[in-house]
Length: 221
Ligand SMILES: N[C@@H](CCC(=O)N[C@@H](CS)C(=O)NCC(=O)O)C(=O)O
Image (cartoon, rainbow, N blue to C red):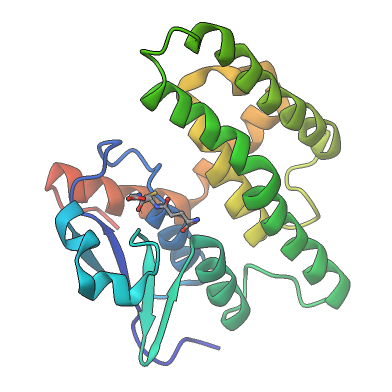
């Protein structure tokens, strides 16, 4: 089933990562590309994002948001879930397999993402603190614990539970945030897993579209 109208998402006019796929509209774009749903993007400046019109859409005044008719959603995980529920391709038909895929969506956002975000925050906001060098290994080791466990579970499988699902889409999106840290390289099967995600044509289209916002060049997709 196809969504009845073209949804509009919000994204940064100037993403802090320079359009390298780390802002969270990327995971929503990727999900929309996977299911073949066209979408529109409303770019917002930081000032616009913090203004009252956006606050009506997003109580925490962040991106991404998702509007489809009279439905307005926030939280990238909820948006990806909405897309996956209403379109074929991101959640299995079998009820148990579907529940497991949804479990991986939560695991990506609730278990894996928080320590990874902590590292980003530590680097960005605590780098000048006298205790930064002591805290950094603690933060990194918390990530390593989770990566080690995930690595064991993935083993030599392509995806976390059978076919590619919204669980993989979110997990790869979250792990991508480690790209610049080098930590992911310590887990070759996870590096290969992320590379498999990035190699998907839908990911490539989403990435190109996000990067095009930054470069000003139209995406090829
Ligand atoms: N849990 C939210 C997090 C959203 C979020 O942190 N968005 C970032 C961009 S990736 C943002 O808008 N940051 C600006 C801010 O928080 O002021 C989600 O997954 O959608």
